[in-house]
Image (cartoon, rainbow, N blue to C red; front, top):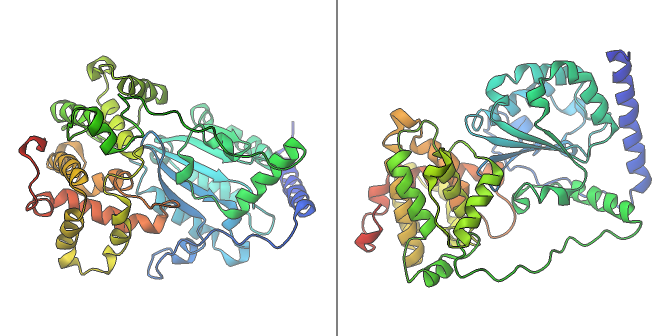
Length: 423
């Protein structure tokens, strides 16, 4: 039987091989690393955060937070305190571990010069108690090598069978498209380049195109992935999209006192089945699923799949500037932003935020304060027209959304849409 020390030696040898293989195919100057997180120097973990190793990249298609760890952003070990790295990882996860989340690990770029020790990995796993493990739904290891497989064998005796089932190897970035909202991922340029070379080697030539066939025209009954205007036109000028009115009505009746409502996910295939029913114009009875989290996930999925966010692209830069506004003036600033929305977007936003305000008023029971709701809904209400939401961008988004929920009567008080939209 191979001893742990021998496996560690094998792991180091394999890592050196990976470095040599990469050197053999490197052509031209290195691609600059991912743009750094932009962390403010007052950040409690600025010494680590500034490298952009850990990013929170919105939600996946089913409402689970995406947290990314990029090895290529690790500086040489003598420039980084790995104990601080572990503390920063826990600090980041602590904000999200009460809800379901996904961890994406980009392995490319791990080298002998920047890798944490196996002792550090053991300590990290030991410190990630059940609080961190139970709501992590999947760990995607992207571009695995023999090094990863050897390390896995070293740790296998320590890892529970249940946790082991959460591990998914991803050989090419295209495979992530099957599982995640690929456009929301923050992928370092070095990883993109490495993936292209892997695909070129696989095909024996130029990298295959990532182009997908043109989408089919939406059905007249389509609800997901189409604009508010399209839904309104196809539903006899109904102002509130049927999916939203249906889920909100159900959750008001059955979900207001459910602890952690909107924090949990549901089975992926089940959500796809419900989406399909809505898109075909067929009735959906949430009682059939015996799970109040299903309509909660459907509501978040509907918002996330809109081609333009509910609060529009135009608002995004204003939200990012919110931190420059004095605290005492932020509510009025948010009110101005909402009043600048197109009428239909304003009406639907008022309907949704009124409901979320109602949810927050039951927070003693459901544990969903305006702050917690902001963490869940912020990235589903506003996102940039290009690129992804970075970890730094999340702070103003969450503050903005918290204000909309907590101060709903003030923010939405003066511009009066039709009475029919009140939930």
